Length: 272
Image 1 (spheres, helix red, strand yellow):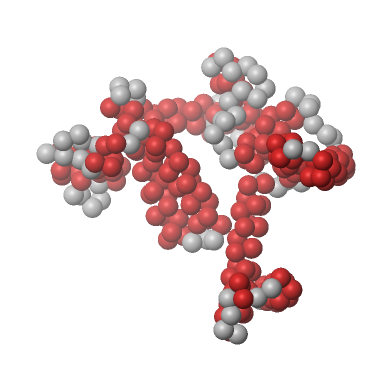
Image 2 (cartoon, helix red, strand yellow):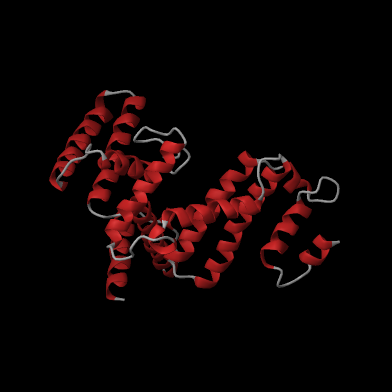
């Protein structure tokens, strides 16, 4: 009965959401789809929701952001409910765990350390604390703890950042650019002389070095690529709109015409 009251309380907050998820997973009265799910089947949705949060922020769509944050929060509640059913942990333990971690990682806020230090120094302190946490989990390797399930471009940037902390890094951007030139040459050679697997390997090497260049230039590569995807989408949609004015579709056009319309769309953006 307590769950029923929580579920129908429009201002029930977290207890309401937890009660709703508990009801959805109830083997007798819940939703068949929700009951069938496990950690592995839900994980792709968790990743997707995180990207939808990032997309709403990129577009400054604040009403959408509220909804997307709710969708992402639901993923945490879903995983915690599955864990609770398995006797692993519950949502309160998740919340207590992250609270304890935040307090431990901010001694300059919750402890006796001085707040009189730069953001850069605080970042170094943060990384030192995280390294200590990894050591406590027997993760003593430099690259330990960089999640394998991250998007490949994001993981590349994190791996390189970790390696750079121990001195495995080019000191100058020019050296990274030279490496990119080298990788492009190897890819060009691979395209004409090597197998498809070897071409893929060389292409991966080039992407990996591009991620390194992003780090040296203070660019977050995943965010940069998202923006590039968004720009491409906007401009191609304008090409379709220009063609529609002529009663045409892209498949009725050719590259020369669409390239000219691309330049027109680009000029529009710059003048707007």
